[in-house]
Amino acid sequence: MYVCLCKAVTQQQIEQSVAAGDGYAQIRQKLGVGTDCGCCGQCAKQLVREYTSKL
Ligand code: FES
Image (cartoon, rainbow, N blue to C red; front, side, top):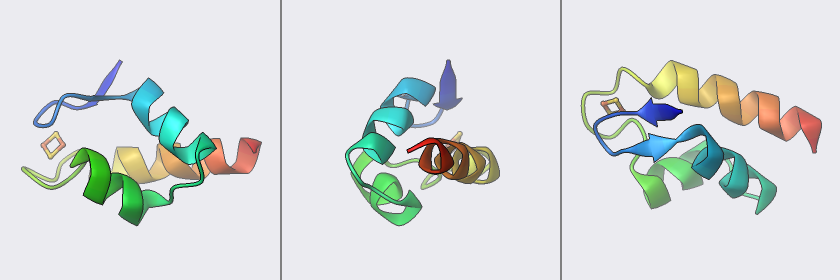
């Protein structure tokens, strides 16, 4: 499922980045999540928190 439509970033890409040790700031920088319209930011942060807590 797409989390960020502007940058075409999927939930799976975020999950993989978290598994690789990235935090939200790094994911934002690498994948561009939240860097255009910004409306995906809260959802993306929530996903990062969820995936991080499962590690
Ligand atoms: Fe992610 Fe617009 S939907 S920046």
